[in-house]
Amino acid sequence: MKLVTPKQAVEAIPDHSIAIMPGGCARASALYMALVDNINRFHNLTLCSGFSFSPYSYLEQGLGSNTRYFTWQASPRVRELFTKPDPKKVGFVPIRLSDLHHVICVSGQIQPNVVVVQTSCPQSDGSVSLGISVGANRDFIRSADLVIAEMNSNMPVTHGDSRIDFKEIDLAYESDEPMWEYIMADPQPVDAKIVEHVMSIVPDGAWIQLGIGSIPDCIMQCLSEVNGINIWSGLLTSGLQDLIEKSSVTPRIVVGELAGTKSFYDFCHQNSMIEMAPTSVTHDLSVVAKLAKFTSINSALEIDLQGQSNGETIGGVQISGVGGSLDYIEAANLSQGGISVIAMPSTTNNGKRSKIVHQFSGGTVVTTPRYCTDYVVTEYGVARMRGKDLFQRAEALIAIAHPKFRDELAREMAW
Image 1 (cartoon, rainbow, N blue to C red):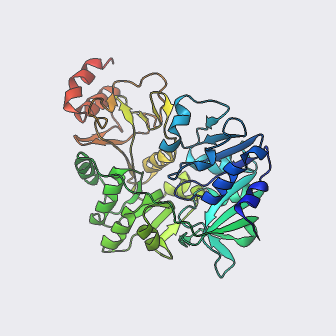
Image 2: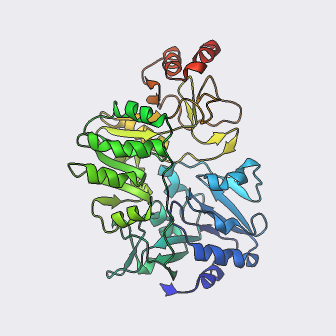
């Protein structure tokens, strides 16, 4: 490992290469700034990342001329790029997170040349910690020719499989910039009722996976009321601290990424109760399916009357990605006593559109096939899809739709 300035790190990135940038709440702001300031040295640099909570400031200059960006998990911060996507500027690659380390690797369809990570400061054992953002980084590091690390004094040192040896890092620079914080969205009026319905079907002794958003955050805070639960998830937020502090017994917690406030990061620092693991483990179907009563709780943008869900596009615009939801839904279906839940409000925030629809509009993608969907929950109740024929599915979904849309949905049934 060689200590350099952010500018020197940028100068070491070869033109015509594929560079993976940090995701989640990890970021390397000084390198982003140096990249923007020196963007004209590149003629064909491809930048890529997964979902990022922090601004994609490395895309501020040169996109479409010096660089191109692609992602497997679009976020609201890059939504504008996908509204009228220019193939010279942006691309979306549909990848399930369980397949990510197979697709993006030295022998995969996408071969990364450079990976940028944010780590802790050096530890006495000759390693640094990937802290709150393990994810796919361990696998990316093994595949890349050049590994650049921002060693940040504020990055928590986490337990589990989060350490990388100095020898795995080529270039590094030091930083004391505050970690990016994820502030949980304020609960909506209907959220409490949705949470109540979800909690009614979570079994004792379950392994729980949670998606991201106000509803999963609220569910996390209620899980201490369930006997014998453990947590297995790709990402967890500050609600995890409430769960641990309220639980009468110690749950096992396995997670790939953490997102929250500074106080949450301080809580996670050197906390042996939180076991970090790479995506190749957290989303491995063969591993997760062996967890008894595995319970997957995610959301969707809309569900049609056959039970298939769309969690990725609005009006044909990519706003999210496949992510790990289908991995976890399939694992729950295979788990002994497992269940999967898609929990969502019955309407859009303004109440003008039902999220339960007769059929998807043109350009809408299917994130969860109808044959994988299990429970669907809204503020009006619980509908189970497994084992029901198409008529029964439609009837069950109409029963938990907003009352003002039920008659219209019933009239549109065409089977």
